[in-house]
Amino acid sequence: MSKIRAIITGVGAFVPEYILDNHELSQMVDTSDEWIMSRVGIRERHILKEKGEGASYMGERAVNQLLAKTKTSPDEIDLVICATVTPDMPFPATSSIIADKVGIKNAFHFDINAGCSGFIYTLITAAKFVESGQYKKVIVVGAEKMSAITDYTDRTTCPLFGDAGTAVLLEPTTEELGMMDYIARSDGMGRKHLYMKGGGSCYPSSYETVDNKMHYIYQEGQVVFKNAVSLMADVSVEIMERNNLTAKELAWLVPHQANLRIIDATANRMGLDPSKVMINIERYGNTTSATIPLCLWEWEKQLKKGDNIILSAFGAGFTWGTIYLKWAYDGDKI
Ligand code: UT7
Image (cartoon, rainbow, N blue to C red):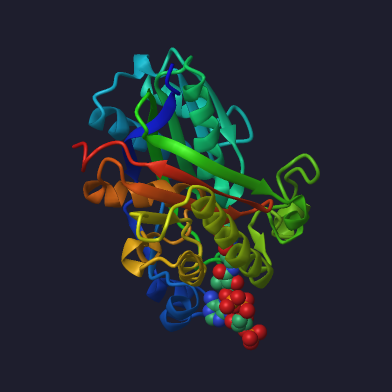
């Protein structure tokens, strides 16, 4: 019997209307468009302003779009996994909230917290359920309201992040398509360099945690940068080599969008022409687990069945990883 593989059969996304550009940011903190563009490559990011709404608001909209595009009924969905570091609340899982809002009744759901590698880890996990033969329609969501944990008085982190919700549908095939290979890695030593300390069981929310700004992202940018540059490129090159893929045979690199310089370094190490790299960091910033699917959503029209695509990410944990996909369909599903 031929092997069952997991293919992406559609992509949905939602970005909030409000755009926070570098001009507005430079009125909030001591920064400039010139600094942010030259050091990071971000010009603007979308921010969810709706009061009392979180990651599920955007995830719900992305899933509804995905279901419409793929002509799938909510009843057909077997499993929903949501990658997020900004869940609506500590529990229940944001995936359960999204499933309920969308009307998905015949599935089980859980969340995965893997920082900026969230989409990679979640796609790998979801693919395993599909490859088992037991699950036919699995939704992977990447939804983040990074603005909820960003300190807009800290110029070293506030230009970096944006909000978005994304979703992809995974289905089985016996063709030589879909997830062909993956590498996933973690190193808990990295936890010291990128975290949010408050609001968990060590430091439950209190006046003290709020006064000490413990509910915001803490990042040692340079340490994270150095690790991201070397480790994201290492796994991207390793997956090419072990699948005998040349740069010429690769159609696309879809990198996590944290810093244009990290993306360029990864593409260089892979020997890739810049025209084969999906980059939209300038308009969305770092939306954590939503960056990679947001690229797939924007580039969907240009993708062709059989395209060799590598997805790569690095993030809090540290976590990092890469997936080699053979794309399963031609063009946009709308
Ligand atoms: O996705 C999750 C993983 N995260 C990442 O991959 C992010 C990795 N890190 C980075 O992308 C970069 O380290 C940053 C974009 C966060 C920072 O860029 P950098 O080139 O590493 O800057 P730096 O931290 O070395 O700071 C250089 C200078 C400092 O000034 P002094 O000490 O040299 O006078 C900073 O205070 O730039 C200053 N600076 C700023 N200046 C204007 C830091 N942030 C800003 C700012 N505007 N927004």
